[in-house]
Image (cartoon, rainbow, N blue to C red; front, side, top):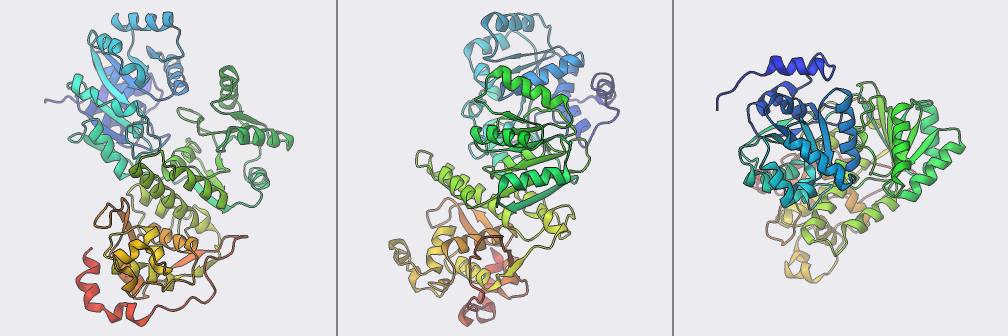
Length: 551
């Protein structure tokens, strides 16, 4: 396909309609690719300018840009913003009465729109397909594309049916966009939307202006109040809670303590929810206390903090929600408290039997990664960015609590060596819970079946509780000494394998430390037993050289 350089007309639209003088990052490259008919996947952090990557091509190409969006509020906000910029845009969703929806369809046939936002449910109807066959289509933009994947943190079944697009409209450019998707989710997006041969534009996930702070819960409301008063008095912020009642109660409590706050959740009356959102967008010192229903499409650049009073369900959710702070590039805080109750709640949700086993396993793996982020004694950005496949090198970021403050820690090298040795001795084919059963010496049918009660690591870890060993394994995953892999021989969906870096831990050339959490008992005693000589690396050096480091 011959290509045309659309940089000049795209730059003109950028300035005249959207008010920006320069493109950011790879925006210009993406826009040129789509204008010339190319398909692509775009991963760009919240506030990075994803919308322009399909809005400008829709204006430059012939026809209407069809944008698939998951939330009514998100559509309405984006269309309202486009109207202010003079762009001909509309939305079609269940909030419109039949007469209004019919009017939008008539204007689509008349060519009176440049962009139309549509819910996936409507897109999949035979009526809408018939309508699309009668009009020129500039492109399909699949916003919040992580919803396509069953492995993503916010899977929507109706999004999973969007594979119909390449089947019925193969020549129309498809651009899938998201701010948060790990490697597995990205692969699923490419498969579901038939984008495997398309270009992928993956920006850095780092937000250098965000300071990440995570602390153990003691009195979460007072901790929040002290945080706001000491660091963000008179500034806008978002506080996320897991329940609607907690959001309402926390907002009321903040108001009693002279912090202007509003509540927001999906159960509120639409008029009240809309009013609260407008006030938050217009006022400079209001705190929004909300469930995860709030935030998508919120274009407020001066949010100075995002706080979490409960653990979100995954690193993707955490990253997406914290990314709503500091969109103007100025310093902002991502602050969170967590405690054992969060872990119990999330593990219970992940273990629901009604959910298919592979999905439960994926949810459990996401939870372990999130807990590893919470418990790390290293720079927060290492596990956070590493989760998305981005390396930070060995340099600390200097802008997170573990970099800025002294964190009380304890040496856990011996326990780490035992854990790594157990992974190796069982063939790197099993998951965390089974390995913990071996380390603590449990005589289960499965262990006897595999004869793992006869290996040297059986029962050598009885000085730790099950939860203590979970912490050890989470740290080893977070620090890159273990990888979570696919099923090999043990019949498990998520298995643990050693990385080459594990050798340094086994040789005690690298020490492993874990943080001491305030008001919580350490998960292992002061003096853990040393690693048995038979398990030490110098006792099986040739075996390690030949096998361990080759994995």
